[in-house]
Length: 140
Image (tube, rainbow, N blue to C red; front, top):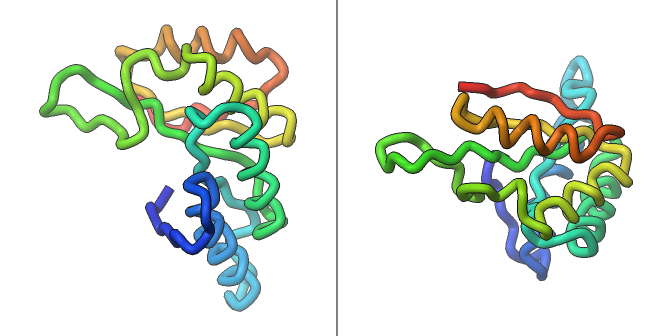
């Protein structure tokens, strides 16, 4: 989610495929072939079908793709950082959950970044997808 965007990809859900490919291409020329795996960004608010199409493009661009991160960090205080693609209760929306279903069906993990005030929301999401692999890598 480095925000490397190539708008030549056509649809917004494909803008960041070039970032995923860039990581793979760099791994081929690195002296020790790193990274061995990567996670990509797709806006899960786009819903299941659009997310599934975008994930197919990401997988094609980088065979080392292992997961997806869509930051959930949101806080009502404007002085606290909120992720650019996050809003209150986002993980409970139909489109977001449909998008996450596409991630699960693609066999990818989902990285979660939430604040301590959102732990119940994160737990609800995890319980709603019992077969999904979640990575809780940012909590604050």
